Image (cartoon, rainbow, N blue to C red):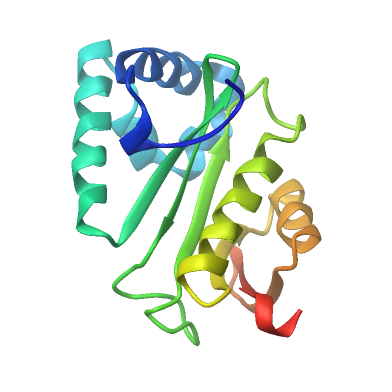
Length: 172
């Protein structure tokens, strides 16, 4: 099964834990560790620890402010993404507009999985959030900038480290 699957619909979370732990420990994904150390801390370690964290995240998603997804290439978990409301969104972003975040592990980057995941989450934004969403993209992540821009997001703000992109289906 290649595609995007919500945490609540994953039946074998142990195999996801194995894929995540292995991928995030791989030196080819050092950029993820450097820029998202909290994510790496949560999804590396013993297989049991990663599994427990995935199950905790699944429970946290039940409050309705966040939906977490796993991106699959066949039966292999190759990435993680989310659409979520945050308590303190960036300047100029309303708290009712969800944040889109995600990552694809090497060697699966550049194979269309990021686009697949983003389009899936934009469909959710269209259905549940009046066609609005935003994403924070690091300035050094040119590939992600091109991905969000090619899917209709545009820059509304920036700081030293990142751009704030907005999606508004009503103004595209």
